[in-house]
Image 1 (cartoon, each protein chain N blue to C red):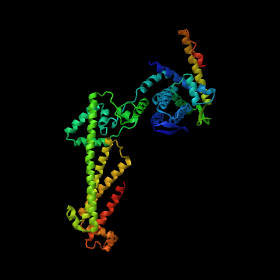
Image 2 (image 1 turned 45 degrees about the vertical axis):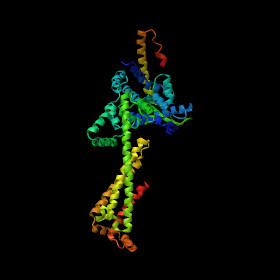
Image 3 (image 1 turned 90 degrees about the vertical axis):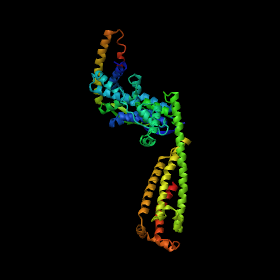
Image 4 (image 1 turned 45 degrees about the horizontal axis):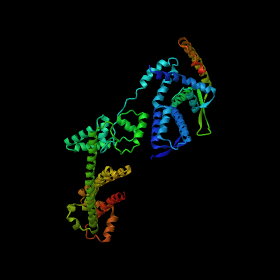
Length: 121
Length: 402
């Protein structure tokens, strides 16, 4: 089992959830999201985000509008739809379950268990 | 020094180097190939606008021109198409069965990661070639050593008494395309066409293609043999160029003499001038002689072409542009057709032909009879000369102008 592969799989599974979380806080355009996600070490390649955004939009979880910017061409601002919010709620509860399970197992096996988990909350 | 031109990416204008532009173009077209359909179009457009932002930042930081390095860096940041497509496939998998994505993904990955099967394509390798790069291209295609291929080719040529191999070579030269773009060069070498490779090839290509590119595994002996081949090739080309050039000059002399003779004959209308020539006993001597002139020109054009092409490797001259080549070929065909038609007319024409032609153009014959100069010559010969002169003049004038 390739460790890098597994790591990126874990991250990928999280990405949709994180994008929705990001947009719940406020509308954003792709480059802002990229900056945030990069800060959080969630994506490495920027190109990854665009197929995902388009798919979420086509599924009706996101919507976008064009907005003029001070510098350069107009930007695509994404916002979360009510359907997206509902979807996010389900993901959130699922995530809580997972993190609780993992935390339980971590506390079972190692001493320094709880340091990494709550950082996302 | 590099060629630079402006491009509009998502409404921003950038000046970009030619090689960088090629790489970017290739990247975007690969993205388009990866993301298909309406959705794909949108994704690629979004990525394009992000690339534009990256370039914009480069410019704001003080760069004047987008160079190859910038494009490579942007590709690095955005991700290669094969990585991105892998991303979409696995994540679409995970969106279907959110729980067991961890199990579903690895086998999926396993099939996706090996690079696509390599399709080697046959191209002419002009950068390593002696004449047209046919043998070098073939060696690349078969994965053989170029030197061995060349020696084999020479032996084969000697064994078959030259012509079959030479004709085969010339046909191959015409049929097999040249590997020009980085993508084609990679396909020729049988390397996978990935952006890494393309970028590398673009960099390698930026050295002038005329410079000999050393083969990685070439020994001193094979290098020496290859030099011998290229010198021998230049000698052969030079020899042919000289022979055909001299031939062309000789043909031009004969042509001028023939045209002068026929014109004289047409004006003076005196069959005595032409009597000494072989076609004097023909029914339509003038038509026949114009026919021979067309034959001469049809021979002259290839001679000039060979001499011209011989100049390319020897004097490092530029190859003639495609329009010129096409025009020349068209003229060649016209002259061959004209020669065939004129000679056929001359052979079959008795007086009946020319009389019927003369009746179509009575005003010409009238004006000629009126002038009275040609009163003593048979009418049919004069009409012959005029009928032949008009189409040929129409043919020769544009060819001189060209």
